[in-house]
Amino acid sequence: MDLTPDDAARSVAERTRAFVRGTVLAVERERRGSAHALPEQVRRDLQAAARQAGVFCPHLPPRWGGLGIDRRGQALVFEEAGYSLFGPLALNIAAPDEGNMHLLAAVADPDQQERYLRPLAAGLIRSCFAMTEPAPGAGSDPSALATTARPVSGGWVLNGRKWFTTGADGAAFAIVMARTSGQPGDRGGATMFLVDTDAPGLDLVRTIETLDEAMIGGHGEFVLQDCFVPADRVLGAVDQGFDNAQVRLAPARLTHCMRWLGLARHAQDIALDRAAGRRAFGSALADLGMIQQMLADSEIDIEASRALILRAAWELDSGGRAAQSTSVAKAFVAEAVWRIVDRSLQICGSLGVSGDLMLGRYLREVRPFRIYDGPSETHRWAISRRAVKRRVQERDAAVRGALPA
Image 1 (cartoon, one colour):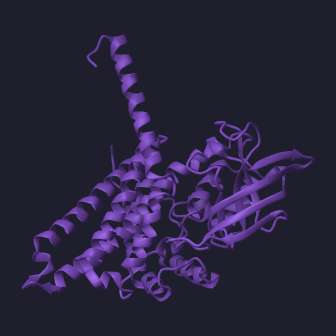
Image 2: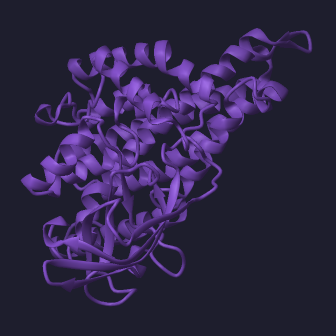
């Protein structure tokens, strides 16, 4: 197992570090970390600066204007970008666009790639991914998918409701999951559609008020009412939507971990500076045992998170599905970054609670990560099932081969 990123990735990570700290953090402070209603010009200016710094779109191959860095290299670069809430947006590696680019590069046909992927990769447009639905529709259990797509002459007619569609406000297109066969609860029968957001019958009815505010375009609710989608906008094969979703979901949950680890590192740096500079009870905070324990625990969480991320990245780079390793990373990192930011705020005391630092905003941002991309409980359920299945297979193989189990 080789977890070492190459020299090119290290160079991009170093440039990203300088760019984020020299350019992006000032914009984050000016905007107080809120991007739900971020003016489009701010995004474009940040991305132009990233291009000039040589760090724009590091995850895509050069044919799409990217830097062609593999997953292990992305772990370095995305972590440095995530040091600021606006860093991923500047590099064009923010959710959901980053995951959608990966999906389009892997699944879309050449015409779809030219129409949707190329302008998305260039930062000319934004996108969204519409799978989640209000109860009783698809959420943690995607098989509950209730939005329907009915075949008609020349295409499909979509009906349903989607919510928590990240980046919806201002997106040029949505990748919409709809049921083309079966009933809610069936494991198959889903199809992905590329739907322009100005298509008749697709209406953004609201942007949901949420705990987090750092995702540009917010989290929207769509209503699809007799929305016609041409036949050439089917993404991948009909009824293969759930399979195609796995192309996106495992890497996307891992890149989320990479970005949020960067933010956790920033929170830890704030706490370290405070602990070293603040005196109480006759000594620096950093000399007090309980503060030392919190700082040490955060260092352990950072190192463990990075190791799990790199292990999963290596598996993806090696051609594996990485379902188990990305689930393990997602469950652990989502909770570790919360612990790190929470400890950092505690160490900073009243200053941490105040608006003079960004820790309160960081805390609100990282809390939903334990729900997004699959709740921790769902991942633990899947991790356990795979572990049991693996052990049964090992035991059966040992019996067949007369080997010790």
